[in-house]
Length: 194
Image (tube, rainbow, N blue to C red; front, side, top):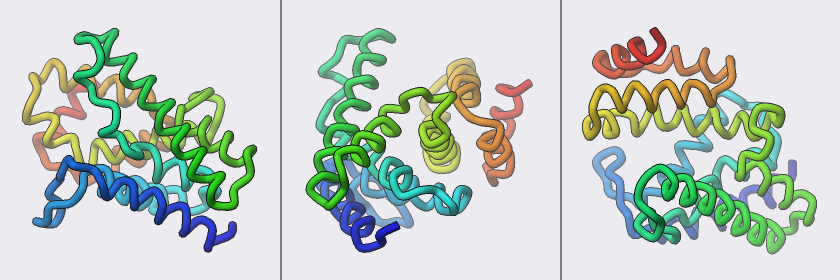
């Protein structure tokens, strides 16, 4: 792994995500939302998958790169519109990362491989795509679940938890069950898995 090249691409991703107009409070300080998300994704990967390869590390950091560019309101209401938005986002994140990588000494092949991970191509058969999905689910549970749960009905929360669980690997499940969640969230996870 060429650390200089990896650090340069991380800096380029962070620079873009630092432009996010959406703010999130983290450690009592307001930060650009997607910048913090990228850090949380990388930290979760490093903690649970320390042997992750360079391209997976980039995909994880860039998973939400410039996410605010494609707004949910620009797509139709309902499930169909939501899925169109999610697919468009995946393609957008992948293409932007591919361009960044090629301007930072990565080969076309390396950038295409990373783009495929970001799009989560062959999710159940590509271990890197699966790890990215596991990391995203763990970051949701650890950092965003409480806020989500405060805004939705128990029925919807349980449905989302069951879908999230279905996307994860056995390893992801094992890690999720060790997360130190507040009691009310642990109870919801218990109901979803019952």
